[in-house]
Length: 203
Image (cartoon, rainbow, N blue to C red; front, side):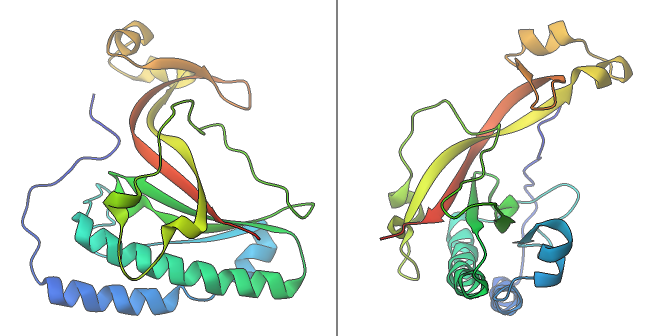
């Protein structure tokens, strides 16, 4: 059984060009897609740059990830201003993955009441402090956010196991954990990394 993502060892060339692509992409995401937001009750953006965001994700080095985070943080403040001006309750969140960097995103949900917070079933029971030192960079201040730890996981639903060449006993023996989905369906999860969910601190 392979992990949900597979790190690649092939050398990536043309880092100056990649940085220019980050700048271009960072400009694209500065405004939320309000049309999508109205249709779906949420909107989001990810860093879908080649050669990282492919079927098998290739995660960039930490120094490059910090450039991506900088664009997300800049977009966060702009989105926050846009949604605040609309005068409707919203929950705006940065999702920073570690070590699956390229899966990170900014996402905003419609909510019913001001101050409400979307809860996720994958919020972690582990007790860890946010790695400020690891992600420190002059272009942003991550201490301006409140961070909640969630679990990035490989998942197999029990209903799908009959089509696999392994059993639930194999998963449990390999350290997977049996869980219940919010819809009541049983599934097996293997923790493979951290997902830090950040919301801007309000005075």
